[in-house]
Image (cartoon, rainbow, N blue to C red; front, side, top):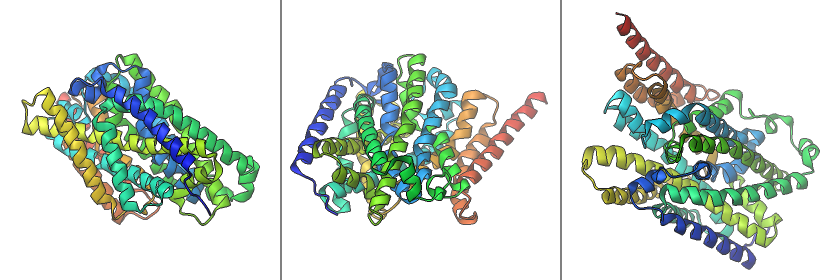
Length: 464
C-alpha cells in the first residue's frame, strides 16, 4: 500500500498552516494582561466562545481517535462526540448562568468559595491529572498523524507535536484558541464532511456497509458492551460540565446570552464530526483490514484524496490535534497558577508575573507529557480521552453541582471527602470490579453517597 507524501501535499500543508499562524498572530495582539490571556478579558462573543469549546473538543480524539476506534468497534466510537454534544447542551441549559454570574476563573475557585480552602489543592490535583490524560490522547493522535505523513519514528513525532502545542497557546491564550478555533472549525467541517461523504459513497452507502459488517458490534452504540460504552458517554457528559477549559470559555463571554449561545452552538456542531470519522474508519476496515487502526484517517487522506485537498485536510487534522492539546494545557496552567502559585506561593504576584507563570507552566506540562508518552505509543486514543473525562467527573461533578445549585446546603467536610474518596474508588474499581463494569459508576456512587450524606447532615442541623 503506497502512501507517499507528495510535493503538492507539502505545499498545501504549508499554506494552510501559514494561514492559521497569521490568525494566531493577530489573536496574540489582543493580550494585554493575564485577564486577556485567561478569560479573553470577558469580551468574547458567542462565536468566540463556541470556537474555544469546539476548538478544544474537536481534536485528535474526535477525528483520528474516532476513526481508529470505529475501525475496531464501529458506532461505539460515536460516544466521544455524542457525549460531548450532550454535555455542551446541559452546560448551556443549566450551568452557564451560575458559572457566568459567579465570575470565577477556575473550578477550584468555585469549590473554595463554597467549601473552604482545603477543597482547592484536592480538586486541583485530580482535575489537572484528568486534563493531563487528555493531552496524552492528543499527542497519541499527533504521533499517528505525523508518523504516517513523514514516516518518522514516534518519539520525534511526539516532540514535534508538543513544540507546536507550546507555540500555539503560549502566544495566544484563550484569544488564540478561540479565534484559531473558529478558523479550525471551518476547516474541520470541510475536511470531515468531504472525508465522510467520500467514505460513505466509496463504501456503497448504507447497503454497502450493512453488507460488509455484522449489525453487532459495528452498528451498535454499545458494541463493546452496554456498561462500558454507556460509561464512556456518561464520562463525556459530566467531564464537559466540570472541565476547566469549557468553564473558562463560558467565563470569557461578553454577556450571559453570548456565553449560553456559544455553548448551544457547540452542542450542535460537535456530534456530526464523529459520524464522519466513523465512516472513514469503517471504510478503511472494509478496504484495508490489516493496517494500524490509528493510521486509518491519515492513510485515507493520502490514498483517496487529491493531493491539494489532502494537504489542506492533513494540516487541518494537525491543527485540530495541536489546538486541543494546547487548549487543555492552558486549562491546567490556569488552575495551577491561579490556585496554587498565586494562592499559596506568591499572593502579591503582579499581572505580568502571573502571565509569565502561565506560560512557564505550559512548557513544564508539555515536557512532562513527553516523558509520559514514551511508554504508551500504541494505546487507543479514546481510551485516554474517556479516562480523562471520567476522572474529572467523579472528582468534581457532584461537589460542583452542590456549589452552584445548593449553596450552603452541603456539609463542607463531606464535599471535601467526596473529592478524595471518589477518584480513589475509581482506581480501586479497576482491580475489584469485573471487566464489563466501568469503575466510573463506583466513583459516582461513592460521590453521591458522601455528598448526599453531607446534604442530610446540614438539613438535620437546620431543623435541630
